[in-house]
Image (tube, rainbow, N blue to C red):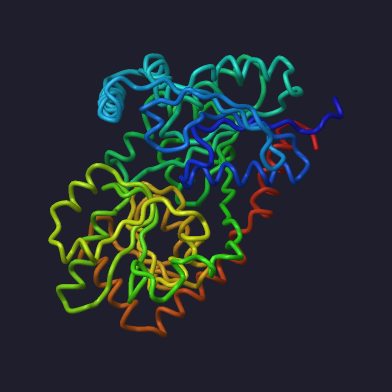
Length: 427
């Protein structure tokens, strides 16, 4: 057995500075593995914004970031842009619904989701000894699965173990969100992986419905980065900042239907019609359906449903620390790192009982859960939080306590390294 460091190759469709939860998860794990003594190479795209995934980006770079080698590859634009991608994806879902196993055709189609140039070649070069022998390949994100397909092929050619963290979005079970994550080729790759590392027991149970072997599923959890020490210096922390003035709730994430942004905004409108002086500040990028929704609002409602765009971690925490609640009514979150960020400030959480969220939030103990798209339920839960300060404080404090005991990156990295070592026999 060679005495070189354990060399792990992480394959992810995007990586920070793209501000998604999956991207931040992969980066935190990569940094933790490097601190734990592993040699880590990340193979990803050069996307810096979500739109780059379909509009394309030409640049390529190879740099060491926080002790991690990060290889960023170009993306070919999708013909028709976002609409073209959605049509392509719909075609894949319909093809998968046909009788028989359509994995072969779907795997070829998946190379456009997103179309990362040189991905297969880069993995082959790493396997041939560029940067040290590869011991294990770990792929992320079943919803943007070109990386999964490439990692799966590399694993089968090289004989190296394949680990997957699918960020599985099972929605409410059987809906459009679930169909997008359980096509023939996705299920085949997940079934052939040596280990599926999932974030919650809910995700593990969801995989069980598709007859996955439980011994190959490991619940590893997630963590949260430390709160920036200078968040109180942010202008958003000031009581007289025009966006943060008065009482408000916060929504963090892509502002889309599946993420529940439209339902969160409607819940705030319901509260305001009941006489509650409350606003909603939305942090993150905006989807076209939310832009159309917001344009139809009255000037009064638009003033109360305020979009802040993508903020720095410092500014995001400044806003979140002063919020009455975090609202995350999503059906497409496999975990919801923003929940942990809210708990770091003891801010109570109102979220959807969908996706992986029930595996993180204990309803009535450290947050409140309502069915996806239940606007009245969201309004009632938010009203309960803002009108019962002692109850809200208890929810936030118990969330903060769970954060400290259950969601520590050192613990998560230790679990991952233990599985790596059992598969490779290397320290």
